[in-house]
Amino acid sequence: PKTLRFILGDQLNHKHSWFKGDQDHIIYHMAEMRQETDYVKHHIQKVVAFFQAMREFAEWLEDKGMQVEYYRFRESENTHDLTKNLKQLIKKHDIEKFEYLAPDEYRLDQQLKEFCKSLDIEWEGYDTEHFFTKRKDVEKYFEGKKRMTMEYFYRDMRKKHDIMIEGDKEPEGGKWNYDKSNRNKWNGDTDIPKEKGFRKDVSEIVDMLEEEGVKTFGRIDKTNFNWPTSRADALKVLNYFCDNLLVHFGDYQDAMHTDEEYLYHSRVSFALNSKMLHPREVIDKVVDKWREDNRKIDISQVEGFVRQILGWREFMRGVYWKEMPSYARCNKLDNQYDLPEFYWTGETDMNCLKHSINNSLDNAYAHHIQRLMITGNYALLTQTHPDQVCDWYLGVYIDAIEWVEITNTRGMSQWADGGIVATKPYVSSGSYINQMSNYCKGCKYKVSKKNAEEDACPFNSLYWNFLDDKQEFFKNNQRMNMMLSTLNKMNKDKLERHKNRANDVIKNPGKY
Ligand code: FAD
Ligand code: SF4
Image (cartoon, rainbow, N blue to C red; front, side, top):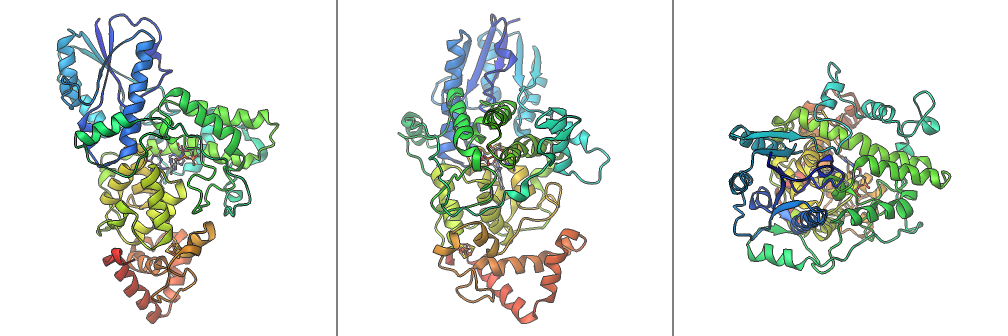
């Protein structure tokens, strides 16, 4: 039958079985839509990366001789609504069968399901052939278990997919987890090769978005665009990581530094989440590189990386499909304050926030610990409403697609799910930030001052105030015992001073 196949912007899987075999009677459809640019305010680089990657993918299909109906943003036929576009094309080409790839996002999944129900032609949904797990595998894996512990899931994934496994299902190197050796501060004593950039000219898309009034934020150098937008680019980023950065990936995974935005991180998240790279291929490349070099690279670097992709990434997706749609509204700690304006501008005197936010605005990127322990930590300590925190994270990062953004933001970072993802909230005072970065050295505030003085680090007061305000939620949580017992031993006047200062920070974020 004459078939219309629909591909979303994050479904750029060159290796999909759709593209093998007989392509007669098949039309592929992709569209740059307002529906997708406007559901949240996005970083300009995020919109550009998706549109540029979609265009390059459509060209690749055409080069292979496939028929493609690609709607550019300004194309007169483009209604900017997914279902209207599809209806129109079904009519135009007398389509007899509609096919789509299962979306990773709940919102789009619902929209396509509704659309299919309304059709009077045949239709079929396909797997994107991208992940190691199916949508409901993680839920099934933890059925009947008290908690969803990522570690057990990860170990079984290693065994199931035979990744760094020896003999009878034992971990290579003898240990499953090398996290403990991966906690160093970076002091400038190792070389960090510059990131693999592409310097593409994307002016046409940037100017078009501006002329069409699409609201975005963040900064872009439109003649030097830096993210991989084709399969060839994506492979270059991956190879570059293996050759230059893997050697210290684990060592400095949690480090932060004012001069180094990427440190030893891979920057593969956009290529992975848009499906230009397959997670299996990324893991295989990294493990092969380690073996080829006769294991000169320490196993802790490799295991740390594999854990993120085989463990966390698949786990988060499973949590998403288990918990949606209610997950999108959870707010277990009942946090109600607004997100400070400086998240959108970077204008604050708190040096750690200034750097992490400006990195995000400059590059549509911040690495995991900046997201978790700087911007996330501050939002949680200031008791910000998770809806507003999510809108920022979903908008600002190049790799932000709801299934992985929301589970990391609401779950891991804001504890809004009440402990599904993280056993305890990721909160810290300034000491942790000072331990892992050089931010405090250049800061107006003094991290060593811990008595709510005027020039004391705001995180120090926010931390105790948060624990005091929210202790009811944690009283049965063993992992919080130590923190709460220190809190309860604190002199009442001192606590009162911390609370006054914290409330000033919360109510007047612009002052800090
Ligand atoms: P590397 O540090 O080099 O890690 C390699 C890969 O591992 C990443 O590309 C990613 O695919 C995977 N990975 C690492 N950590 C996680 C994790 N916690 N969950 C899922 N996958 C992981 N990641 C996204 O892809 N999209 C998001 O929208 C997103 N939002 C986040 C929001 C918050 C508040 C936090 C704390 C984390 C978020 N992450 C998100 C996870 C992580 O920070 C990014 O995947 C990572 O920073 C991407 O950069 P990289 O490719 O250089 O990663
Ligand atoms: Fe951040 Fe406090 Fe350090 Fe300043 S002193 S950089 S506010 S942790």
